[in-house]
Image (cartoon, rainbow, N blue to C red; front, side, top):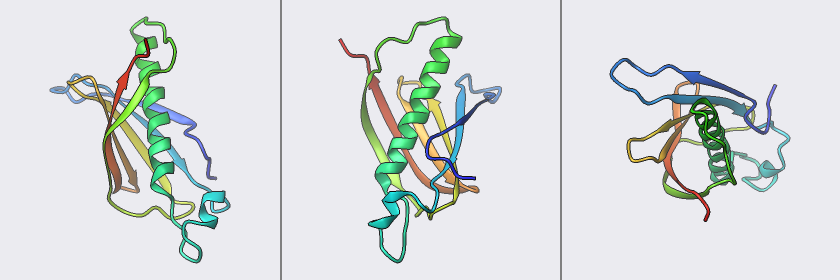
Length: 131
């Protein structure tokens, strides 16, 4: 069954040489999603803005989980800048996606979206706490 928002997050243990944790979220966009009506009639595919939105939600979940694990209180949602984004392959209605979010050494969040191992999109978010 397809769900609009990420509903399952799991922590991926780091490799022995890599101390950075990664979070994975799975989701898919149901064939009846209203975005498919206009993107594109007769050949529907998931708009890039929906992929970015899903990746942003997954990254925010990962940040909240990391803060909670470190005993930090999550304050107001931080502002976010899309530092980079690259769309590599189209996503069709009903395809299952995996979104992986990993904190970088620079303090940013890298996201990778895949469909059954096929890279779909990748990029980096820079979060900034609001004053």
